[in-house]
Image (cartoon, rainbow, N blue to C red):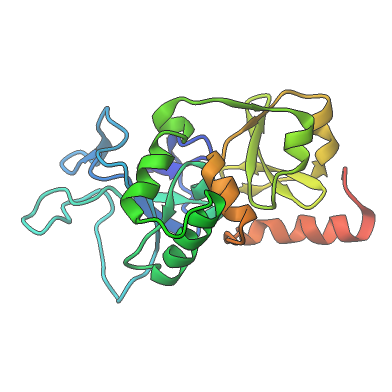
Length: 227
């Protein structure tokens, strides 16, 4: 039975076999005795994105990993960094320090600030991410066309990543067949990635994509979008 620890771009957490490129956490939200989630979906505003390997450390997923035999933080998993950012997470300053510093610098630039500390970033994101704030941002077609690569949107209850002229549908196992971004002109489109994270990407932060995107990029390059 798979554990409930795979996060989708909406910020919901699912029980599936797939893992992905990154782990991360929102604090302690599981019972280590049963390895099941508690009712709460976060215990901290610091929702982070971590590497799956760090200095050879080993953890029992959703087990007793705390220093005194307690739960420790709850391991969550993401298809890629594009997904994790859409769900409202940001890079960890411990295991992904260089990426976290770059994210913070671009985050500050996106808000016209000289610099910003991690707790301030977390406070902003907590008020913007769908899973913690419930804030829904409907986009005009013009705004949707301006989104940078790596932002994610929702149409008809499905998640799509922006990549060049295309929208790439997101599925739990990876990315699907691409479609033209012109879909934003005739379908209601909602922003999933927090607005401040979108500004961070626009300021120069480049999130890491799942390798599942590659085949569809190759197809699009050879025969164009809407495949």
